[in-house]
Length: 496
Image (cartoon, rainbow, N blue to C red; front, side, top):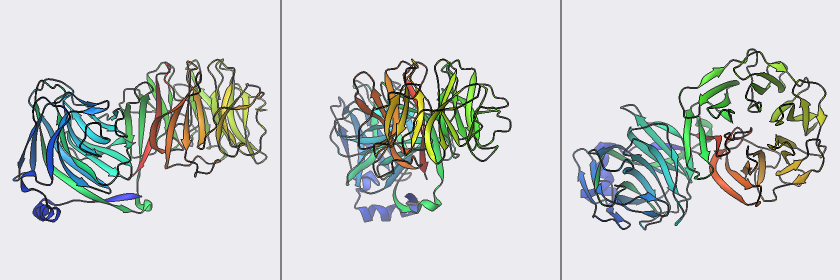
């Protein structure tokens, strides 16, 4: 579902205030106060002439499982948004002082919350605590020093929009998920990030909006290329686009991400910037099954240009004329053996999808799985001893592994979710994969679904969720680990 924005015009602000029973000296808000053990009592000044809120606060931080801040708020429910021009006044003491647009479950320290926080050093991020008492995590934007900011709550998802300079508000990409219960609090907050000092921020042109749902048919797709460290789980936006982005690979030198969009391949620096096209000659219908050779010198793509069916090709890492490897289709690449000699892929032959392998130079393909149903997503372990893949032979889609010759097939995951596209980390310690809810048919990995990125510790067999997002097909189809095994790249989506 999508949301239609209803803006409260400034001319009607008096009527809105009367209708909501708001205190005149707080404008559109109902109350304010300090949260947590601040050393100096905070304050707020509202100027009704220009709808400006000036908030002064101390406080050690808004992080981990506690908060210290001054907060002005109103109670609301449903889908809502708040936006404002944000200015941190003065030079400031700590570069992490924060001025925030905040949605909180309660006014107690440690409450579940989500905010758009603009920091003293210019960083902007969605920071969030998914449940009361949990630790805080964040999704950093690639826009610094925004003039205006906005946070939208749509169902359980929270979205950030920012304006660079004096430009219009634009989606900054990415979304996080916090299941707020009605009623909740929405408002403005300030934290000095140093409890020995006070800091002041000014919020101007503040608007609160109620959002109404509208049909999916008039929504537009947005894509966000993100990176997540597996230690902190604090996500970072690399690229936000109104076009569809899919399936990032991480270059072997750790400097670039390669992804496909609209049938073509692109690369972008890991720190962000402008993407550049990788020339692929005749191949103009590249899908999201592509990758990089272990030595970093070659690309492998799956492309439909020649016959309308996906075929596998190789080409130089810098681009060039693709060389056909699989004459038969459809064939979808997924894994490259660590010694660089063999490709593993999913292919449909005689009406059944199975895992196959073929020499990287071409030749005869070898069928590795024979179970009825769907076997897909093969990827080699870094030591070359196993191929991990997903199969629905048990009734749900689960992660399996086998020897490279197809022998000793064994099930790895056994849960109620449908698990797809397992990717071993380069150090061999982790298995990253994507999970769909049980109601999604086991043999499908569709777009635009609530999914989870999960991590399996291969030593302890413990599993944890590292991200919840709107995505699925295209989010993490291919190997996307950083070379040092510390981070993953993926794509999330939004229907706006």
